[in-house]
Picture 1 (spheres, rainbow, N blue to C red):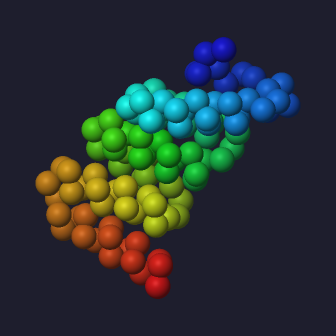
Picture 2 (picture 1 turned 90 degrees about the horizontal axis):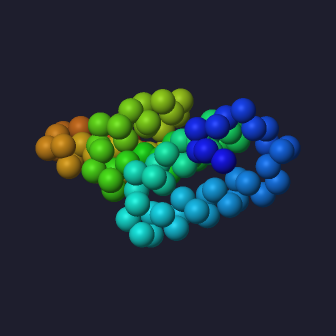
Picture 3 (picture 1 turned 60 degrees about the horizontal axis):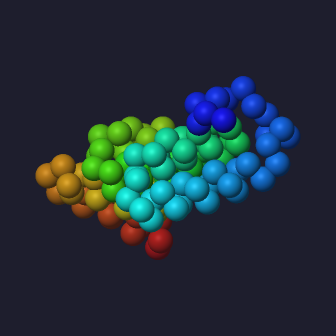
Length: 113
């Protein structure tokens, strides 16, 4: 099965989500962040769990060094989470934009109370 094949339906793929997710996590552990990011994007499109998979995809893209793409994934999120704000802050920090990074960290801190 190709990762980009979205013609399959959830009911046709028993345990498929768990297998793909576990595989993506293993890829992260071996430093294959770009492939893991593509799998997380696939899982979001196939299984309708976008917010969680967006955070995983953005984190993988961050570790891969593709900060702009990570920020694009975060921008798709309707409501930021602490995790997404921390990733966003790290991206801005790596891109040499400390003001934006600090703003993200402050937003995350406000969410935590």
